[in-house]
Length: 328
Image: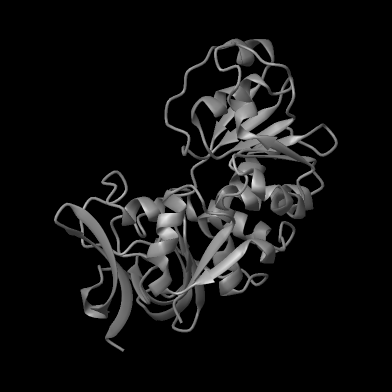
């Protein structure tokens, strides 16, 4: 098969427009592994790429999709053979390399992981970069000494992809979870995922002018950044850690050193894009076995034709849970 369907974003008269078009395999970038994509997922970075954000994607026309799961069609390396089921997340996929919103991708072998036995291709994309990021956050928190029974673990942006998976995973691991959101209507959704407390976003925005706030959280997964992140830092219990992985509330970060030197707290950065493949493999193994979580309640499956509307939804801050893209 030399032709396939792909979502392509083009610049037209100063606007960025998405259309499903026919592409040729021969036009894909160079790489050792050609993969027939079965599933992808929708992430905030994909929406930024689709809307012309030059910090994510420099040249258009372009096919976004930072996640892909599928079957090896051909390979020039011995480690990967035709018929192998594989996962690709991050690196340059969907940024400046044609991504998972096409039925075929061609990528370097160093980006490709064989599917863990405990996950189907579809389940791997229900997780995708969001699940990998949540796992990296929890791993970092546990390295920092977080254990169950110490108190509530706060998750900000809890209805989004990373947030909702983090809530479900933490609850499944036995942690007490406080879910922060600006969507009060989604309280029942978050409680079904395992949250024991719902925190209004406005509550986390209060007191940004103060150097310290009342000790409250035994740990945190922050997906939003900005003033909310530093208010979380100022509210950590002595010795606790927050893992930072998002910026939807802004990239600015202003605060004082007092929480760090008076309460011995930790702020840990999380990047899921350029992690060495061996680290990603370790996280995927955990996600497929001891950290495997039922996420059926947060999924919404769409085809390529429905993606543009879903992209508008996530850009508008209205996305809840995870969108799986079926390229079958």
